[in-house]
Image (cartoon, rainbow, N blue to C red; front, side, top):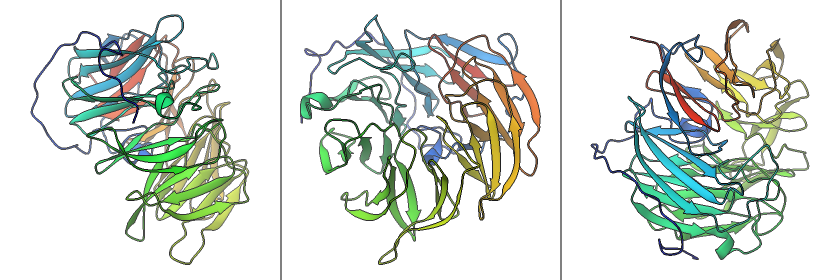
Length: 408
């Protein structure tokens, strides 16, 4: 493992605040797209309308760009950013969930390339937290673990470990946590792999090579016949691995999958956005995975789909929400909403929250009929996926982190 201490990486000034250690609550949002990475929150009482002057609980300044979503646990909100003209300075910040007060900030110098498409940046992957620590991956291949008070636990330069790793036009796959492992999925034109990394030490517990290719999909953890599996989607395959040791469990090949939106899971099925949209019955034992249905009427673009209450929702880049029956793929309704969309939608409180690139959040009813309830401008460009936690919705732009909640 190629590690760097504080003498090799610049670690910025921070404050320390002591809060009691608690387990993750149902209202926490510990990873990309919330609990399980499904884009669903159990939160209720969320605001339907807001603006830059209405229903803003707090607004915190950020030091630089970021497409990463905030993650929330144990009363703390963690977010990443990058700054300087060449994106070489990497930031991890922590804010108080109730007040928006900045509790600490840590800074690091990038060890990998910062070249990327101008639409993205080095703070594209969303961090992950277990309430005790936050683990942040940057598109430079720098992987950092900090405890909840901002103390450095470990840091790795993946480019130092695997010199041909590259972000190409931009790396965005977000890490997830499973038990004591950080699950990292990196596919690029260089060293490509999925790895289980000890969350306490940063050392590889296992590592499996993957085909080379540019891919932005995040790993998905599912339960298949009572057993945990990591599902990975890339251009040419949908493959499941055992998180304990990295052994391959099953694979679906021969189809074209999308390398940007991530798959989702529900009622025992994996829903995979591709050049067609696939509903997949996972493999088990000697049984191969099966495609139960496929559809060309559920385009996704950048955003990942949502499965909820036996319905699948897909948001296209051009702003069309399609709803289909999860068992058959039969269309139920579609609705055009304003703008273009880089962020994935969020389903919470019976509504779908979709934030367009101009920072306008369209709120649409979920269920049998899609009806536009509100269109909420915030006056800021947003490409990051919205998050719901503890009665609030969180949005992040390049300059600010917003906490949106009903005034009490």
